[in-house]
Image (cartoon, helix red, strand yellow):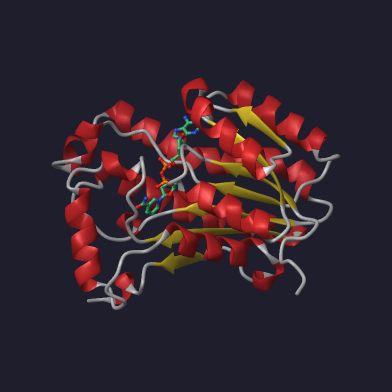
Length: 258
Ligand code: NAD
């Protein structure tokens, strides 16, 4: 059978370790024939992830702190060159901004800098990535996927300012999809149930959240990274050629429960 991503080239943003949703997604896309380049947040994370990038046969990898516009622009320009002026997809699996203090207690206590940081890191970075990818995608079209969470739709205890950021991210998915559809660039999001990753461990009582999820979701079990990766493959491949502006829940049906 032909591989679903054969001949496709793209960027994976947000691998911090082997448990990252981005890593499992990279492995799945690679297995389906994709050529990958990676960005990672800083040198410390680089020490852990560069060996993984080498192991998977990455075309390249670049340090990119997405709060640094100059670095963002230089890295995307470089990746565009490395791929010969054209690439096909982006996986944006980046979130951050709130401190541990922000991810417990009341949302109303959020301070200005946490609010703005969360928006910058967790929302604007997706907009900026598509802005910078556009020149390299506009000829042949492409697809982008980001990661959101149900806390952007409904109130989830302790998710607080991240929930508000995810709501803005989901709205951005729609606006970006509307902007880019005519260039055959599709923009979507996945909304997985709780998975114990580095980012998730910052949320107060995350284990309680997982327990509740397991008890209430129709499928009565937790989501595995590889199941999110399979849905990312769907959204980035030709299988979803008329799907854009969508938030696809990978949550065993949790969000349908009343
Ligand atoms: P993770 O900690 O492995 O990944 C988060 C990534 O964001 C890390 O690689 C980190 O380096 C990166 N990042 C943060 N600030 C950055 C910056 N300034 N510049 C560059 N990179 C930066 O955790 P994960 O759970 O794999 O998270 C990936 C995405 O999935 C996030 O958007 C998260 O909100 C979303 N998500 C996670 C869950 C879950 O339960 N784990 C559920 C739904 C959605």
